Length: 126
Image (cartoon, rainbow, N blue to C red; front, top):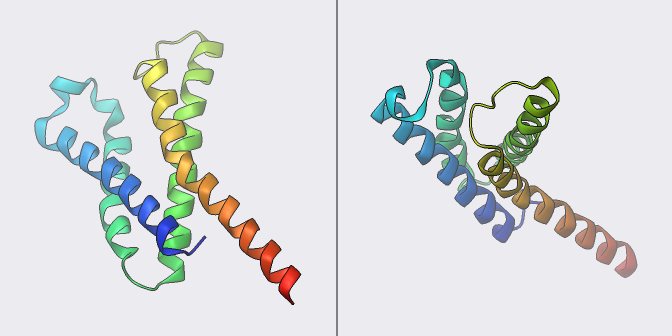
């Protein structure tokens, strides 16, 4: 979970999330929808400092990035499901929300798989 590859993958995903949120905040909400999404764009903008903190050797930054991506991914997957069940219009298209949900969860899946492989190989060698 703390390998350079996984940290780089998390960093790239967080930078993508932060930059897209920053662009929406800079352009304004008339282009992207309603003001009720403002907290989500601010939270997305906070991904930028978190991404740059991954360049340090801090385990806390790596864990925070993992949790942030996990939360963002599950939220993007849950919103279309919830809006379909509640029969309310979703804030973004269902396909875009699901796409970004899986995109944000991908580094988490890679981190879990590599952590399990590392644990399995260290158990066999010791």
